[in-house]
Length: 276
Image (spheres, rainbow, N blue to C red):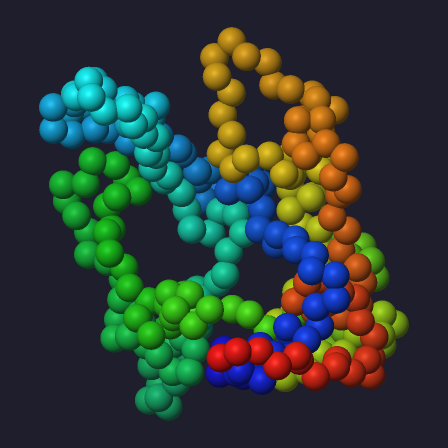
């Protein structure tokens, strides 16, 4: 993120032409099941519990009038329990490290990005012998300086580029090396610059999700059917979800801040002056 400076943000903003927006995140319950990773459980959603006079009552569609007849507010609060890498995610620099002889002393040590060490900078959690569930046995691990929270503090806005791998290599397992990647960029007339955010399109989630229709992909996250209700058909969901709204299409080539396709050598105009 040290390359995403003010100039890079302005370059991304200058790409905007139509003011269109699209979401790069999947619903929290996609891809569904545990086919991609058996250790990552699907999200579970619950209503919170009230305290005080209404201790133990469900905190969803809960009326304050149950405690004070003069109050008219009705509140809905819920809680989500999920694996942070189940659906769309930003891997931190502590997600994967390597064990090797980094000190030249003949002994291997676990090292992460830029020399940060396991057990020193990236800390595993101590076991809680009183945990009530297996997933709660190791509370409070810390990625330290490599945590994704630092990315959130900085904010992510700039110029983005999409490389359409699926269009060139299909869905079979393929090792794409530097030379092949350069040929793909040349074929699609895509230019990648320092500080760009590169998105690789491979349709992996569609393979895991069974190519469900667009309506399903726009459905609310963690959707659960009420007992006795039938799941609506895709056609019915299409009518229910923004009727007449065209489906978003990802253009090939360079993508600016609002999804504008671009071409190599397509210089953006200078940004309009704005108040600080």
